[in-house]
Amino acid sequence: MVAGVAAILFFCYWRQSQSVPVTSDGAGNVLQAWNMLHGNLLLRHWWVSDVSFYTTELPQYMLIEVLFGLGAQVVHVAAAMTYTLLVLLAALLAKGRAQGRAGLARALLAGGIMLAPQLNATAILLLSPDHTGTSVPLLMIWLLIDCADGADPGGRPPGTPRSRGGCPPPRPPLAPLVPLARPPLLIPVLVGLGFLWTMVADSDVLLTGIVPLVLVCAWRACPGLIRGGERSAPRWYELSLAAAAAAAGVAGSLAPRVISALGGYQESHVGTDTDFSQLQHNAWVTFQALPDLLGANVFATPTTPVLEYVFVALHLAGAIVVIWALGIAARRFFRFGELIIPVFAVAIVFNLGAYLVSPHARDLEGAREIAAILPLSAVLAGRTLGMRIFGQRALGQQAKAWFAPALAVVMAAYLGAFGYGAAQAAVPSANEPLATWLMMHRLSDGLAGYWLADSTTVDTRGRVVVSAVTLGHGGQLVPYQWETDDANYNPSRHDANFVVTDGPDSLPGLQQAAVLAFGHPRRTYHTDGYTVMVWNTNLLTKLG
Image (cartoon, rainbow, N blue to C red; front, side, top):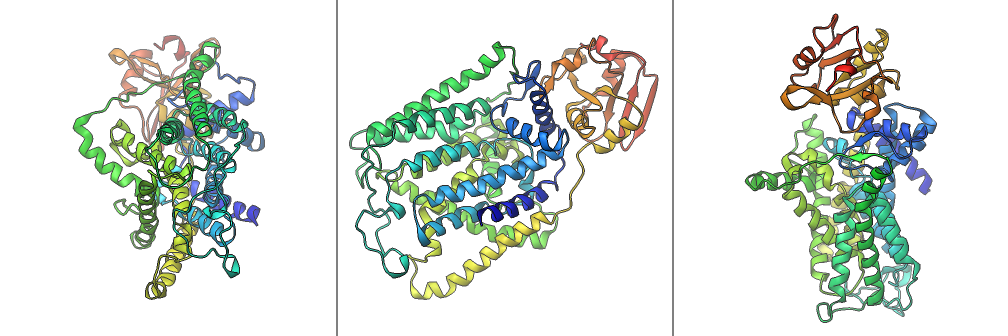
């Protein structure tokens, strides 16, 4: 059954992913994985972005390329695979060790919240590697921690009777957990290794996993700060988890420097300074970011207003549930209980706070930086509210009469939005017309702005190499050190004789800079909005 559900999820997410064109961001990762697959395991000569995805998505891309070869389809297949895993892992982690209806209710709520990404969030959740995939190893780490937790299934103390039908009788929501007397000593070691592996790929795991775990464990270790309930594990065990996570954070932050020192890839760095004059604007974007990830951004402009607004409006139920779950987690923060609940709540708040003061909050595309909030929120909601919602435990008789039909309508809307996303028409890659034209005219090596470069190379399956350039000091053309291979600019290995200007997302001023650097071209072509300037010389010899 699980395999069938996974296959349906994968197919639908693959279809929705294809409704958004692959750009040079994802294409750069495709080329990096292709290089690794062909022996360049350290990615020598490569400049990656500020996030390498070296131990997460790049190995995944390599496996897909073994089956499908080099091409834009790698991005869509990987995105569908990643999001399918996230939905299943979130449902499994939300279920925890609860059994029967309690476990099913938890899993359904978590999986349901993640089921149908809003169409305008497709590029964030279902396309290029951009922090969404980092949540897969994060949830796997927490599954490991959760398996070692001593909580009784459903959170009942031992000996609590069950009512007929397998449902637990009414109980206080903060029933004590069974303390774990002798937790496995190997768990902190494995947790540290898991965080280290993930940290090498994406330092966002600091805010989504490492720092929240360290802070919550340190808080719970202080005598007198937390009074209610019982620990699910001894103090030393929680502190060992925190120490392992902290050590992984330090080692993981040094790993890219070690790889670079060994001759491997180099990371490009972006500015992270806070512009306090933009805080009001950032606050508005942050306010939209959470519902956007939850499929409930009523402020977004839909392509088909009536139907999409209906889906978005009904997705507000999921946003309300997540806020409700955060409130419950805040109330439980000063009580002992499941470690996962306060850690996930702190991670969500930290991510929103960091996003608020970051330069990424200029627009909603920056919500990719906090994509982990979606699975974290889904798991938190499932853990705290699964039985309350599906079991209707907190409702009176009159409320139950309308709640069941309302719940059915919301569930139908989520399923409808899920199918609607899969029904979207597939679109070609961003620069596929250019790629076709270059191959027809036997132009095999050239230069372009970043958004035209890697995308075109991948669209030609590597038969045409287009390397990215940018404007340096004084308007001089120089290699663009972001998702690029320095070896492509070596004139002894490559003979670049054309420059692509104009076109969608082209580099402003590139045409004038190319003429200044290389002289007037021998031929100039105009096709599908692109301008292709061709010389009879190797342009790399004159590139700054």
